[in-house]
Image 1 (tube, rainbow, N blue to C red):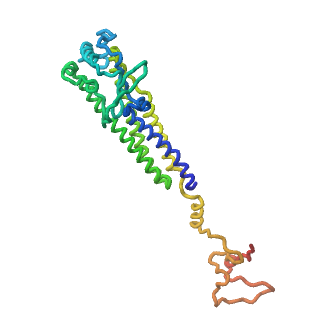
Image 2 (cartoon, rainbow, N blue to C red; image 1 turned 60 degrees about the horizontal axis):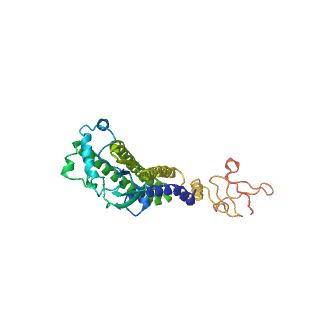
Image 3 (cartoon, helix red, strand yellow; image 1 turned 90 degrees about the vertical axis):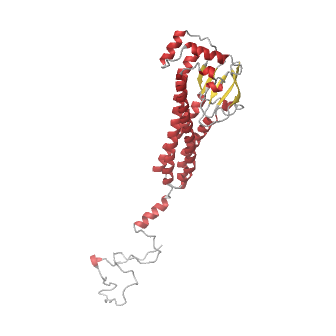
Length: 339
């Protein structure tokens, strides 16, 4: 298979790698532009506050049982109600807050339709701090919060930082994979190097996707289950997770095809390979017509005999003895060839 076959073999993993890169870019663009309806539907988590209330729909015992279920023993239902009452009195509070990779967007809900009004400035290693975003970052509210809140926020901040770094590394290694993939057209060595970067891109993309999924799933199952009694709903964004896991699928498929191109689809021409084998085996091109060829090993071509060679008289009509007749026909010549 020649260059054309090599290009065809590289074309599939190249497209898969580009598709994975597009999905990663979509994840990064989520919650960055308030005027874009497409990007506004890309978020990891939505916090819906339109029905918030300080008086929970569950009893005090039920609230405390939920807290104990998740190992939160230093928080009481009254503390939760006190914090939410201050939040409920805030007139600047939006109906919803969408959490993305670089920041968050907020807006209002009218007739079950979400209208995004603003987005925060993109920030690296971003994590959503509810007290800061909701304007409750003051001593009066902090005194109501237990020590467990501070510990949980530190863990959330550290995990969010790792998730951001993983997405950046996934983006960078995928870019390098695309650039190096151009050299894979020329040789299998190029495919080998590209495969190494493809494996790295796949690992970082998978790590980022797993981290995001686990992080916000835990947030939904803990805080979401608790605050749902106070009218606060947590919703995971399906579009964002579809994009990040599609990036993983495309990256895996591209890696497998890059690996396949290392073993198959050589860019060398089969005709050059055959000619090289012929030269290595001592096969030469066909001689021109009207020539004589010696048929034995070590035979002297016709016309190149030693000048002192002795001629023998014929022993019979049209019969001449053969010189140096080892095994009978050592110096016999190929008959006169005609084309």
